Image (cartoon, rainbow, N blue to C red; front, side, top):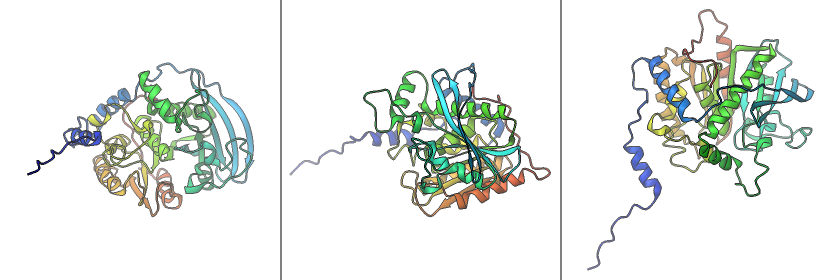
Length: 362
């Protein structure tokens, strides 16, 4: 009689799933004083995203070009986030609005870069291009009377790796691994760029800081969520095709290295991170057929997020928009929710009280 072959657990994911099954997240929200919980988790999250510069260098803003657009005006600038780390960005001002402008900081995900936000070619910015999936965020903002500050994320587009002779297909992998070796994370560096971008917006004098938000799709949705959780100057958030549970998405499906923060799963799940933004208005955007952020996980995470917003007395400021397709932004479904929140801000008695934290990340 043949002996039975013993069952062997050889795949690393099986062991890691076992660890997840047996992890009690130390700072997951389970009721109680919301503000106390937010302070504890935000403090831990700031620690986990790695070292952030305590001193801020001069922005050293440089104007690269200015152009009139049928919807308004666009200026391409560069500013210095930290030594040897310059950020390229487009400032898009709508013709249909008057200052101070409601404004969105817009961040693209894994793509050819921020040029998609204003629908021009990467190399010269001179040729108009078609942008799929409503990812022309700057154009979308200006159409709706909202200013847009579209920044290039580290390792994407114009900021992709150009000096290494051997580099990964996705430059985010190299940058993410190098950051880890240096006591940082690429996630933290990208959030810091958003923070420095807000420093620039404060120099302009034409931005309505009571109506300042952040939006992006995929890798841009990632930074939208983490920025909203950590940067109190942001008042609105519209993360697209990222919000889910860590367990159902980046811990079970292949994702690029820039999605991972060491030790984070020991402390919180994704709705806890987004819950740090409560009571700030949030429009979560998802695709019904998104293969890498499954809709079942999105809905589970959103139920937990609603619980947190309910505890903040702001359940009606927490929205989920689900498009019929896949991994993309859904402008026609998402923007009406966000514009409604922008209008509500002007109503008597409507206010957003942010936790008592420093005004910047560092």
